[in-house]
Image (cartoon, rainbow, N blue to C red; front, side, top):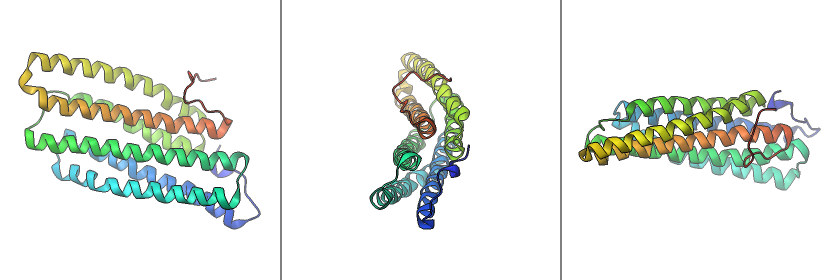
Length: 231
C-alpha cells in the first residue's frame, strides 16, 4: 500500500496540499538521516569539522518542522479533513516532532565529538557507538520507508529492532561503567561516549514512534503505549 493511495479529491489544490506535506516530510526525514549519519561519523572518526556542521545544521531541521507544521495547520483550518486524510495530517504533525528531536539528539552526539576533539579520544566505546549507531540509522531509514509506503511489515520490524537496541544499549552502558571504575582517569572521556550512546538510544525511540504512526495511518489505532505484537 502506498501513501499516495489516500483519497483523491475533486479539488486539485487540496490534492497538491496533501502531496506537499508528504513530500516535505520526506525531505525533513532525509535531512534528519544525514544529521544522524554525520554525527556518528564525526564521533568515531574524530572529525571536528563534520561535528560542527551537524551542530550548525540543527537550525535547518528546526525550521523545516515549523514550516511543515504551518502547512498542516492550514489544511486543518481550510479543508477540515476527515477519515484517512485527517489521520495523515495528524501523523505528519507527530512525525515532524520526532524528526526534530532526532536532529537534537544528532546535535548532542556532534557536541560530544567536539568535546572529545579537545579532551582526547576516549579509550573505550567507539565499537559500541558504531554498532548501535548502525542499527539506529537503519531503523530510521526503515521507519521513513514504512511511512512513505504504509508498509506495516516494515513498521513492525522497526518496533522489534528498538527492543534489541535497548538491550544492547543497557549492556554497553554497564560495560563502560565497569571500565570507568577500573580506570578513573578515563571518566570524563568515557562519559562523552555514554552520552552519545544515550542519544542514539533516544533516536531509536523516535524511529520506533515513526513506525507506530504507520500503524495509526493504516488501522486508525494508537499503539504507542501498548505491547505491540505483530498480528
